[in-house]
Length: 351
Image (tube, rainbow, N blue to C red; front, side):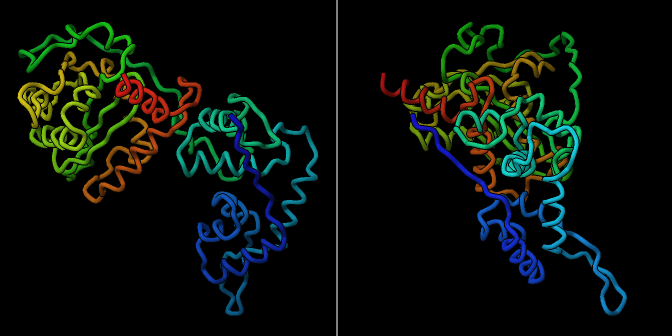
């Protein structure tokens, strides 16, 4: 397969003159980027580079952009003495990395993995460790350690064995077949809820396929068992009972009140009989739905804890779902869950 090539050019002085005029006309940086064919992070970098305090005739001051100052700083940086960085003067690479991490919420490893897999050509080729070091050292103009998905080292959680206080509503995870545990076969999902901030009613219902880590997200009107069953019913009606049973062979959930209707989740809304098999985790054992937990962290990159989901639309959720499914994953050699899901579906329905 032939690799795709992308090339990004430096901002010229003539383009800086355009930026100056556009800024005076209050043109948004995003529009400037589209007009010049640049990443929006490159425009923000340029505006910061040429920023100066202007004294008005009435002795008030305001921050403005000067193409001359920006061009001088750019050329001074090229001539800067000292030990050369591996990134050198490859501003195209810097722009791309900053945009992917700051705007698209990628991790450093995902950015480098995507560059390699897609064959995007830059002058620079650095390791993940070097990129992390450069971010920590402040080599980038707008990218800092605060922009990284995991800003610090996460502490390992200690899980304690909890004695179950009441009978489980359905089949225990202890009876789940080994093939599900080992992720060898496709069609076994984990399901969870992502709750809104204080005062919010709408909830995110998230399903994660264990083998491919494919994500399915639905916006529920409330955090109830009835809404969960209705969401599964809508999925079954959309794809049909036969496809549903092949794609959703099993669903593993926790003991939350929204998952209390085991029969409603398992029973088909189209035909007589069940559409899937539901397994319940042990109480307070989130690690038994590890895929869910990791995917929820990805959701929180866009909607931090405390976010109210009431103003979100189905279009917003579809965009988030697509972002997760197309995210380059190191465990899959930087192919995405969407890539693996497509292959699995082709295998299932061509058999």
